[in-house]
Length: 80
Image (cartoon, rainbow, N blue to C red; front, top):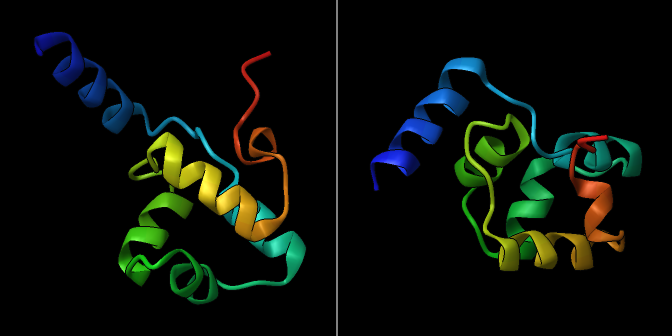
């Protein structure tokens, strides 16, 4: 549990960009409000995903990919 908390603190302090949800929405001309309605989440939750303040769970990320009709990998920042 301590390791998870430390990792969370590192992510928050460095604000690592982990997802590309905001960019994909912009490429498709869609809004965060639209996505929030489609995935049945609040606008605030989706905004936090888009700003990389929080990350969606893997099932939610897969749902977002389905809604946006993209490969789930297109929603992630490459590590290579």
